[in-house]
Amino acid sequence: MTTDALFAQKISRIRQAGLYRQMKVCHSPQGARVKAGNREVLMLSSNSYLGLCTDTRLKEAARKAVEMYGTGAGGSRLISGTSPIHRELEAQVAFFKGTEDALIFSSGYMANAGVISSVADKNWVIYSDRLNHASIIDGCRLSGAQTVVYEHGDVNDLENKIRRYPSKQGLIVTDALFSVDGDLAPLPALVATARRHGLLLMVDEAHATGVLGKNGGGAAELFGIKDGIDISTGTFSKALASEGGFVAGSATLIDYLVNTARSFIFSTAMPPAGAAVSLAALDIVRTEPQRRSTLMEHAAWLRDSLGRAGFDVANHPTQIISLILGEPRTATTFSDRLMERGIFVTAIRPPTVPAGTSRLRISLMATHTRGDLEYAVSEITAVGRELGVIGRDKVST
Image (tube, rainbow, N blue to C red; front, side, top):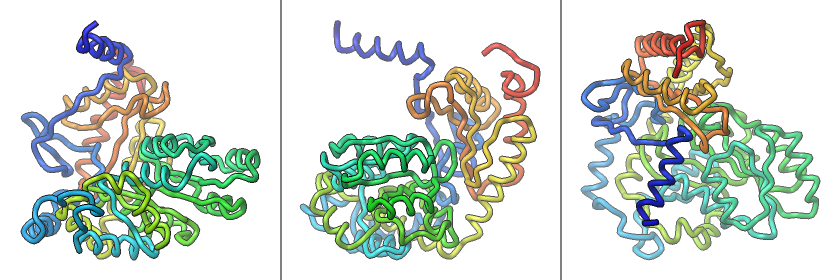
């Protein structure tokens, strides 16, 4: 069998399972509406939660950084030298997160994978929430530690599993805001558990940074437990409309990661323009809290409206709304029909979610309008009835 024949066979299996993926090309910035193909559609699948991807202040920050520092970093910061703007961003992240220091990575994925594989080793036990992001899962695998998966958000199950390894050094790791279901980890209880058992606690704030908390500091700020978290990670690529990831913690932790985190040591640094955009976005997060309040008002209204239309919608107070549909083909058919009606919502299928829980993941922006949301409810409801997800007008998919 030739190489192409081998991969063609693998792709065929993916298609048969209803799990084939294709990228949709957008010919415009990530805004509330985007140009997909030759028409404008309502975007309900972007992580640009505060609507900053088109903000003129961020564009100007990028332009100035390119003029001052050039287009790229030139290499790893330990090899080619670091830029003042990288250190400035790290200082601002540390201030924002209430920690001694911070370290930026080329992506949030690299941050999680690098931190976990550096902190834990074969002598450790890592306790990981069942629905944690793939970057956390891969970091656990790379560490060589024994990974114990506890049931999603279930602190009692976590406690029971910790008791099996009373003498082991350990790390509890969790997403703060789970990116598919839109629910929050029970962070206060996790802090208490970690302290009771002498374990480290790592929290990934990727989807919470800039969105939750009085100042946009994330779920830890929302719950008032910043001091209880040993390692905070996140990304600049969602609410902050930039690129790259970060780790925030003690100065000693950051010094250790500079010397051990392979995804930092062996990766080219974030381009200076990305750092400049991230700094400008952090300033907007601090000074324009109305973006967060508008986003949450949108989410509450849409969640309530879809629930009243007959959809099974979980009541999680975040900007992510998940409509569970079951089988992959139902989710992809629903997504395709919405695109035909001018709404961009991507179907989420295994392996991203467990089998039988394929869904539409709706993520909102502060820059959506009430008219956008009303149109979305109307069209989602109509397709839901067509496919028999709600109502009685069931048709074959």
